[in-house]
Amino acid sequence: MSQLNVDTIEPEGASTTLTLGASGDTVALGTGASSSGFPGFNKWTPVTATDATFDLQSGTTILIIEVQAAGGAGGASDSGTRIGGNGGSGAYAKKLLTGMSDTDTLNITIGAAAAAGASGTTTSVASASGTSFTTITCTGGAGGADSDGTNWGAGGAGGAVPTTGDLNLAGKNGTCIEGYPRLGGVDSQYGRGGANPTDHYAAGGAATGYGAGGQGGAGVSLAGGAGTPGLVIIWEYK
Image 1 (cartoon, rainbow, N blue to C red):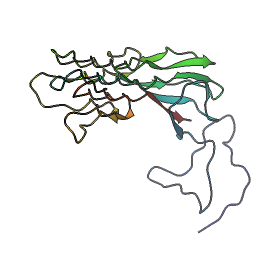
Image 2: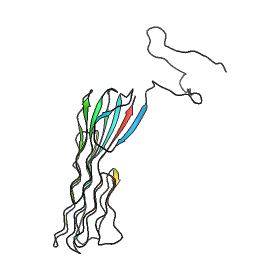
Image 3: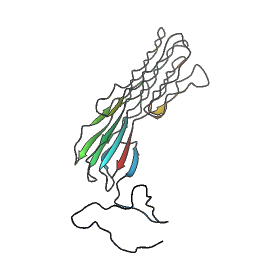
Image 4: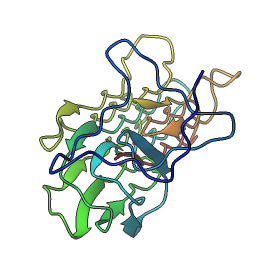
């Protein structure tokens, strides 16, 4: 095996293409060596708090952005035989952005967790500075309705189908159907709906993860479970 020791290898003449190996060959780095300047994956970042000036990593030119809106909370119960509606889950979108610059910044808004029958709020990603693009927006799931002693509370609607992603998914509607056993809250792309507590008549279970709906309360004046907040995931590539 021959060994070549040089500081720099550059293509000859006006060419800007440098080929290492032939088709079918494997180019391997030595133990402990690292690479730089090659295209490919750069970093992924889950964002769980609003950030108006999110910075990209050095060398980033391509983004894949996932946006999950917040889930709605479950409704409260008013009677031992009437159950509050489950909250709906937030909408989801996924978007590919090319031609980005590592000096660009993003304005990320994270929808807050919903409690006491409230709706989940919008989660979005916009261009803060540099390369502009259409804001990616997803609406939150609606809160479940309270029962009123006569009627069961209706489930909250899932977030509407987004229009700003390459992949756009509506949130799931919350459920509460009279005459059926108590149902758990609804899931999202990144969360699980509030689960049934051990006691059938109890406050609603809180959702977990991101964007899922809380469960409605069951019993005399028992609260519904909280929905979960929104989430944005930024995938960066060189």
